[in-house]
Image 1 (cartoon, rainbow, N blue to C red):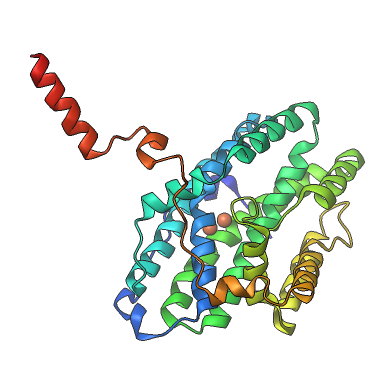
Image 2: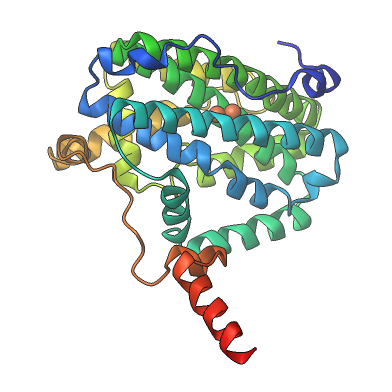
Length: 313
Ligand SMILES: [Fe+2]
Ligand SMILES: [Fe+2]
């Protein structure tokens, strides 16, 4: 698996959706599970610019190759989120994308700032922290593309298959960058390997956890992977990541599925109730109206200001 940053810079672009049969989105049905996963995936794609803010405070970003990659990567991920939103809107699910993104962010709370600070501190205190970040990047990209392939399989929706297959091509390139960069960092570097293994076993969480709750993460994992094929998919991710120096035998994804299954064993309604009850709307936070959050003023505020100015004049 090769990756050239120069080629990537030249070729990076928003996912090409020319020829996607958007007008046939409603010709095929989707299950509640499919819709739950699509909302989850869209929200996480749309969360990338904020996730990027965590990466840009690390020492790893002194590396111009990494920042060149992140600049293109961030743009490509933006269009994944945009297109998943478009698909859902065309399917008949109404929401305003900007409002939804703002609400997801407003609901993050103080935990987001704590995570940002600890990532920054960790990276500057620990030289080999980069290996952790790069390995997590590889796991996340591989999990994402595996999740999209599983959703294609589960949904059987031809238009969704076409769209996700195009997005998967981008995710493969992202995975190649992270995997090769992690491999480079870890090769012949025993200390980095120890740090990486130690951290992954303790801090790694599935893609989206933190933005989504444990129950939401479990709902996605169980819908997509709770069968023989899904289990094999996750085992394959573990096997591929286990090829990184120092990570042999790592079983993050398989363990995560086992933990989700255990939570369902203890409470059979766990996770599935979110899918059954169509719980994919994002509630607006109680105390943070969007105008305040973004400093963007509502049309009514502008009208008041203009009136006051004309009165003064
Ligand atoms: Fe993506
Ligand atoms: Fe990606």
